[in-house]
Length: 367
Figure 1 (tube, helix red, strand yellow):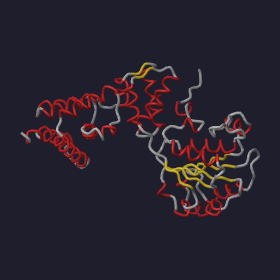
Figure 2: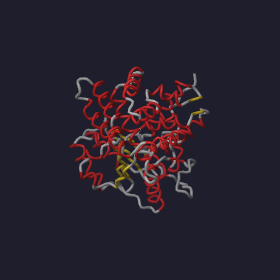
Figure 3: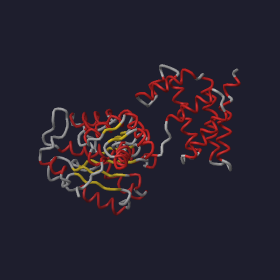
Figure 4: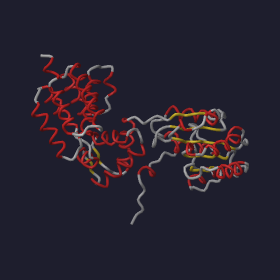
């Protein structure tokens, strides 16, 4: 049986050019290498799955490359690059601070820092989840971080910057990684699908990108899951079925019924959603998102905030043109109030039904 490699590892970027959604950071790092203005300590922070450790590895590989390309990318042919690609580089050291967070672990690191590199100019130390270091370990690390040997560069990565003590922050160049845009995630997933010979609908890509919540690693993991479920031909229906996502159509139907003041129709639609296994909280938060998307469609300036594509975008525009702005504001206010009260409610279904009845009567008040 052939060894399967998950997409998050198989398509992990290995050059700055292939990093998705972090152009400002990658260009700054490339310029630092090009102009020989390397700091001795960097802090990469941001949410999960956005490329912090990946960029740290690419940066470390590029610094020691002996034949940089004109675009300041590693050549992948020199001795240093080949050692890195084969996971046998003695110049790049990775430490997981989640499991190596004691003073003794940091002492071992500071002893190791004194040893100069065998190949290339620099020894790079990548410390992942650095916020997990104990207070004593942080203090033991301070002096080395401030005045390391000329050959040592530290790259710290964390998802929780606020847990790092100010004395550490002041010794680092700080790079804040952004959540990756839905359009960027969709584009990369499309490339991965083509590379794997998978046919996938654009609406399906959009759902996966939304579900990933700005994390490329999560998106690729979901993609692998869907491929296992659907095979090489993935439809929008396959994706919403596998990920337990409510179809857009339910919300379009619901808003149409609310605009017609059809209370029985609204309650029967909600009953159908519950029968499909969705809970009321999931439904009401999805409705809030839908109404918000209708609101941004009302103005040509804010329509770019709508993160859907293709036919669905046109459906949003059509429905937004039939709904008055006051109706959308009031509906959003009611759904938000229901969302806030949901956890404390003793009769959750009744709470959602009352909210839906109020929404169905909003346009009646205007008549």
